[in-house]
Length: 247
Image (cartoon, rainbow, N blue to C red; front, side):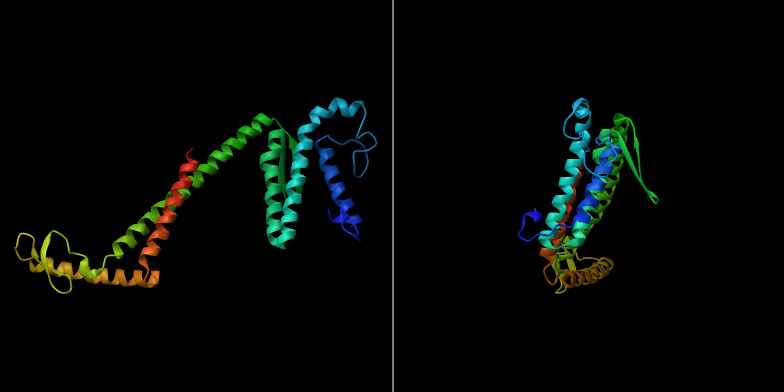
């Protein structure tokens, strides 16, 4: 599109390099024949061979056209935002998608090696089974990770909920009738006094709650309800992801 701009000067070497690269890929798939560096050669647009082989070549052409469109769109989006790092990540992801999702359906296996990318033609059905098995394993791993995250976040929700109770209210339940000013129960609901041993235990529990309550206030900026809601939202999000993966 930039070639249509006034006074635009095309980068001839870059365009030639791109055309040569695409032509080499199409030669691998048997879409292009001949010894030209780029292009479809003398018989690329018409002729009996093109008509005879057209149907067999269509899936490969479709794959490469889609690949080219995705790369182009990623580059254009990055150009708009000026984020080169994002463009690189997007292009690499698209290339991985071509290798892992698109080409196996056509019976083409690509393997990235230190010496370069190797390719081989194989049975598409076998490769599709491999893809399904790989996807199933990846889903199991993801589910396992999410389940561990869910347990951790649910424990955090429970911890926050328990820590939100003010120390002096910890034992203000129907089990007791009277408390001292610190909230330590001194009389049972039946009217009997709380034993000395139980009073001592309750005092220790209140002291522990005081620390938990203070830590929560510090952590939440004196807004424990907001922290509780945010953590509960994380729990709900993990549950939603698990439900999607279980479908």
